[in-house]
Length: 201
Image (cartoon, rainbow, N blue to C red; front, side, top):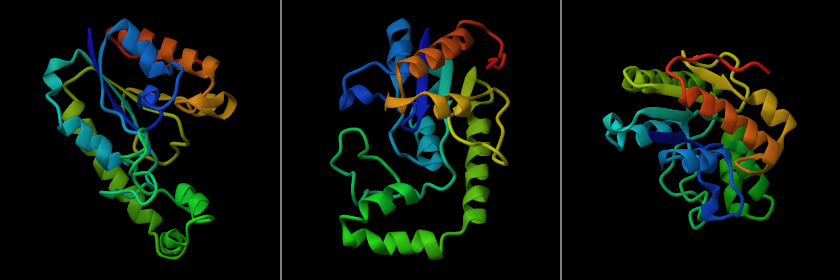
């Protein structure tokens, strides 16, 4: 079975920088996987991942969706040379943290704190999600989120692992070994059957 994985750091291949198997690697051990997910990327770049490849060649698509508050950029001011995060977009918490040691980032912090339009960000995120739904509607697609998704666009086939992220944080794909195993088993069960059935906690 050929599977496409797209999305953010929760779905990226962390072995480019760290040792250890995350759930995407476990899925890749069982199937023929193409993983285009990029750590720190915005929903717009997830859309671009899907547009960059012929979806007809895959039996299943797995998409890990991200925060509406990431701002797409071409070159990241901090992570452009990092193997895992080189395609990251801007998000407040990351820039705020690095601004403690890099004064050049203070103007971006100021933008987020005083000028960023949250309502517009959610509006744009919704439009992108609708586009993603449109281009994947004829494919067997599993949508995944690992963050609070309240009041955001709801996909038909959506797994929400926010509860797991709160209890099983770790060093690979943001999860510990148990968290990665649980996500792997849940997604594998989804992949191995035709229909969609949300997991029980």
